[in-house]
Each structure stands twice: as structure tokens, then as C-alpha cells.
Length: 270
Image (cartoon, rainbow, N blue to C red; front, side, top):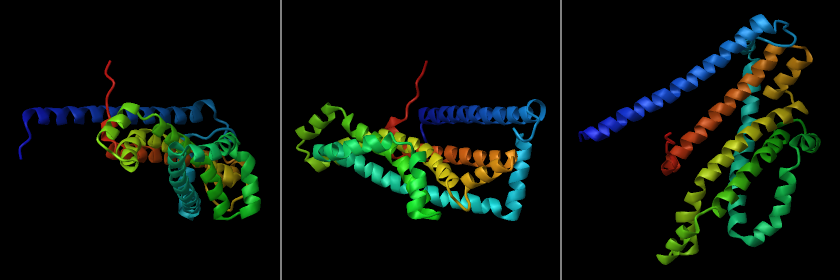
């Protein structure tokens, strides 16, 4: 089937718009990396305080060659993956339960408010004492760091559903389950994705916090051990890898949102 001229024109315009967005993103990244290298070479030249990008990359190549970097990356990915998956599942389920049941909300509200406002760094040592230095103490910290943004945003998204949409569903004799699946959940999808994006950042911070309080490997451990010997290149390498993981995770969540909620995509034109 041959697309119509208008459809072809729209596809071409979309291609140009996406290309322009990618160009701005790439330009922004290149600019920051160039400034980073120049500052390290000509401004902050003392290597115990700062490291240029070239030194960071050399450190990464050396650690990769010894196999040490792969171990750190693998450890942090496993801790983050398990912890954030649990946070996403339980956060979404808990938010839904609190949104549709006033009794559940009354029971859980004080605990959510209290734990959400408690600094994870204060609880990390306890998890290490209770669960040891191995995987599960890190998973617990990552889970606790990431679950509440997901839960609160899910709750808010369902509560923010337009009442008129619910009235329309009831006017077509929709039962409670149908209202939930057809109205409440689709309306809350952007809020849920936003909560997941917030949770990703907090979960990555949770990985670092957990590994700072006791670990044998991981990017947080790499940062701590590098800081102790004033190896700024290794320290910045760990920070750079964590930042990259955050960017990749957020972009994947944006892709998920485009797939499951395409109606939310729009452009704001001046």
C-alpha cells in the first residue's frame, strides 16, 4: 500500500524533528565532555583533586584489561536490577491498593510518610548488620530507595483521574474492575512512568550508599576505594558509569511510555 502524500510529508517532518532533537542531545554531551577535558588539562591540573576525561578513560581501559571493572559493573547491575524490579512491582501494587481502598490507605499512610522521609543512609548500616555484606543487604537499600516514588506517583495518578471519565464508564454499565482497567490505570500510566523515572535515580543512589557501607565490589566500592588513595581518575570513572546507567534507564522508560501510552506524546509549540 502506497502512503498518501500527506502521510509521507508527516513522516518526513517527524524524521527531521527527531533528528534535530538527537543533534541537540549529542551537541550537549560533546560540549560537556570537551569542557571537562579542558578544565582538567588547563584549570584544575592537580590530579589529586580532579581528573580530565582522557585520564578517566585510560583508567577505564586499564581496569577493563584486568577484569576488575567488569566485576564492579556486574555487581552493581545485579543489585540495582533486583532491587529496582522489586521496588517497581511492589510500588505499583501498593499505590493501586492505596488508591482503590480507603482502609488500606489509612493503614499504610503513616508508614509510607515516615519511611519516605527517612534518609536511606541512616538505614543502610542496619541492613548491612542484619543481612551481611553480600547481595541482599544492597538489594534492600536499593528497594527502599526506589519504592516510594513509584508508590506515591501511582497513588497520585489514579486519584487524579478525571471524574467525568469515570462517570462516562458507569453510564455504559461498566463494573468496578472494568473502570479500573479501562479508565483508572490508563490515566495513571504517565504518573507511574514518572514515578519509575524518579525511582531509578534514587535506586542508583541506593546502590552507592549500600556499597559505601560495606561491599567487596561494585561501582560504589570503586568510588570509595579510589577516594581513599586519591585516585581521581578511578573515582570519576565510577561516577561516570553511574551517570550513564541513569541516562540509559530513563531513556528505556521513555521508550516504554511511548509504547504503552502513545496518546501522551505531544509537542508544545511556541
